[in-house]
Image 1 (tube, rainbow, N blue to C red):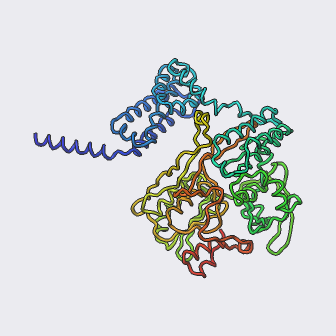
Image 2: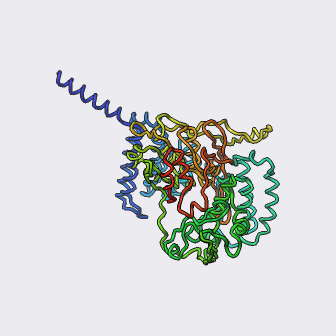
Image 3: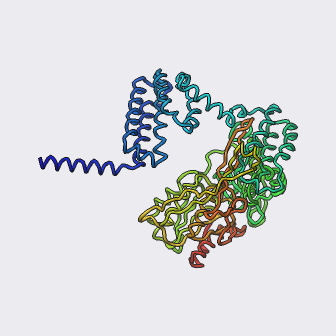
Length: 583
């Protein structure tokens, strides 16, 4: 009896410990892995075998059984990611049941899914797009929900205005495109108070006649760009992703210029054959198609660049778009080298072979025992992964330099994860607010209103053994933008070190993207982000602690004055700073 009691106590203790060890992240990972197993079992074939579909159904039903365990249900109340796995599993299950020719079962799964307004809004578009659910969505329990949500979503997201490209769109579509831009900004743009002299409705009327007078879709597109330029915001602009219109405006030779001390220098050459012909970094571009380079930029490029600050517009004009144009029209460039010798080349905008691979993250260890990591994008977590992989080496250095001068943004979390290694306390990523709208409030005389200032998510430190305690400097420029500026804003709040270089682009905030006629896309900035203390920097840029500029002479000599300034600030010897090469 005593032995039996001992066994029961041990077993009960082990079971309790196993339950205690289960975390929301572990449960989430298990359910996601089960969904991945189903995808592997079913495969990508248009008509997978019936037994594969049936096996997938069994796996998803087992996953639902796991989700409904009391301990998992309890964890789902603490984790939004885990909570919504049930919805995803039910949708996956309905699709497989639909593919098996079981519309009643599929409708029953959808009925379990569409229990809240939030889930109805999120999943209805997916239900409408899924051919396997065509019969199930006609079920009397599902159709009224889908119809109601569709009616509401069409108010803002009707596909009627997402018409395809034509060389010259009908006038009605051009007017509709301008009207869509006007409407979305009117209700969603976050910074009208930064534009006290702007009458948005008056500007709309002025552009209506201009749009109607255009004789091509290209002309219409350019006017839409200029319309949104008037909002002076780096996250409010018009562009095109593909097709003939992109071919007319988006091609460029594989080199990238930038503006230094009022002159335009070649910064990158992304094609080895061009380098072998003498087109190398450091050359000055003095003419484009026979015009002085700045005259060309002011006439053909700058008028279409939306930006929050002068430095932001300069980046758009000279780095990203100066050499863009029709893919079939070469560009004629006159270069000048450091000795003053000039030569001219005609460069195709397309037709090059394999470009030199772009390396967005680079890590070096500099003289003076300083770690230097350059992260040119936060679209992916490549910078964070490289930082973590090298952390055992980085933590033993005397100083750390994080170079964000060419980082145009992406996902702010990829930057915040790096910052989590620079503090041992939870920290704020900043503050923000957005507009609110009430129809009845407006009927009662209310104007543009903003929600209260919110503190952004608090981020946790990386944890024991993952704290960098030595001095830090972050390099910035006008090209530092969006999520990279979010990094800098939080970094300022941490008080962990200097910002070295030039003011950043001065624009962040959640943009809302939408389509307009002609295969054109646009977006509007909807969110006002600020420092953790609520101070705004949009339209100004985050200011450096240590002001330092690149110079033409230094860059042509292969030197990096901004990096050298950071090394001096960190106390590295003068001799070592002279070795700061531009790489």
